[in-house]
Amino acid sequence: MAASTHTVTNQAPPLVGYDVFAADRALVEAVERHLDPQLLDEARDELTTLGRTTGSAQVQEWGVLANENPPKLRTHDRYGNRIDEVEFHPSWHRLLGKGVSAGLTAAWSRPGGHLRRAAGFIVWTQAEAGNGCPLSMTHAAVPALRTDPALAAEWEPRLTSTVYDQGLRPAAQKAGVLFGMGMTEKQGGSDVRANTTEARPLAEDGTYALTGHKWFCSAPMSDGFLVLAQAPGGLTCFLVPRVLEDGTRNVFRIQRLKDKLGNKSNASSEVEFDGTWGRRVGDEGRGVRTIIEMVSATRLDCVLGAASLMRQAVAQAVHHSAHREAFGGKLIDKPLMRNVLADLALESEAATTLAMRLAAAYDDGGEEERAFLRLAVPAAKYWVTKRCTPLAVEALECLGGNGYVEESGMPRLLRESPLNSIWEGAGNVQALDLLRALQREPQALNAFLREVGLARGADHRLDGAIKNLLAELADLDGIEARARRLVERIALVLQGSLLVRYAPPEVADAFCASRLGGDWGSAFGTLPHSLDLATVVERARPVS
Image (cartoon, rainbow, N blue to C red; front, side, top):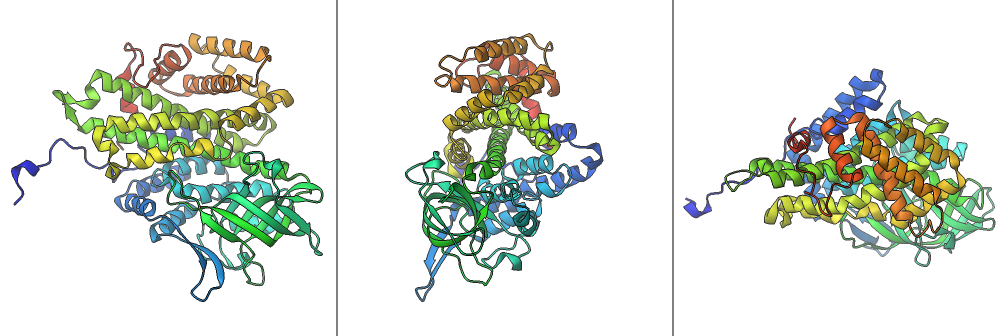
């Protein structure tokens, strides 16, 4: 019999056995707002099924096990043959298989695919973010391959398949494949034009032998990779399969797996090419232009990944506070804690609303929306991913000492939180990319201004922020040095415009008062006390 001192009281139950999709009101409303009504019932059913799966005890346990048992590199078999294989815990395969079967690599092959996939990505990666990388790379490879119709016809059906077919075999023998990407090298980092990997033409037209080193190659267990290398005509994009058509292994020497801060369940690697066979994608010398479509899609996934993590952190904080008692009442009812929770909820909802607007623009595909994305994607990638870490820290603190303990899951969220800001171009890269769009593509700014202008006159603080932004854009002196400030303002104005148009008045009012009106401190929990914070918090509560 347990001693009376071991009786456990006043602890929040685990947040488990709930529908992750239905409990996220901002996400549900975004799907209903942007998706063709004829597709809505089917999408709701799919996302509800995925939401219940994500919130189940079994899938949450898979996430824990995949994180606690990171992948292992096997360079050789027992006989000394070079095999370069990555071994994963069975839970990793279960997670990745569920993600593939849920259509998270199939956006390009069905109506409303990008919006439906974006919602599913936000839901599913709350179970474990690590499996988001191969899902993202596989999804994003499609537009790059479409620059070569023959390659696209061969590979796209495999990439968009909903069958997870693990194991290294010739791609033609598989029901579905995964893709990775290799751009970064030691000497260049984000400056991929400094790459030194060499591509030597072979006798067969369009084929090359690659020699060089990739300092960071994602998802090394994949069936194929898009990589950059220097061909005679300049930097060029290549498709590198892991297994050749005759069943032999392509030369793909995995030197080591990266020991990362977070994202432990996912394998990231350094690889050596030594006469590695590759097929050119696009023209020689146009490698960046060819692969940029892949990069753009993965940057959107960084926004989705950050929004997913934010939502899970807020859900955990609100859930804990709704059950924990202190100082004579529930934490969630204490004015100061309510302010903190409401502030976190605003940040999360603004991220989700913006991410889903971008996904809807991908589905539209029109010239106006493409111009809008040219400015909005780097702005969102910069700002939303940067807000992720401070939010994760504050949400962890809402659980107090319990949040600092691994079993709470909050440390895993915190370690994951900086990732999406770094991958696919860190903050300065996004800021410079946005400046290039402003300087070279005036239609991008026009499309952005038309978008935010849809809310003009609805909130005086938003109107003032738009006016100040226009003044900032009119002064190009020293613009690179203040690029981060400019990108931040663009992102906040866009978020404010979307919330004013689509969110409940209490949410829009609180966002505009704090983020645009200046009535905000330097930490979360400093919203104006006169706002309806209880409604904001209740909206974020994970009850379905």
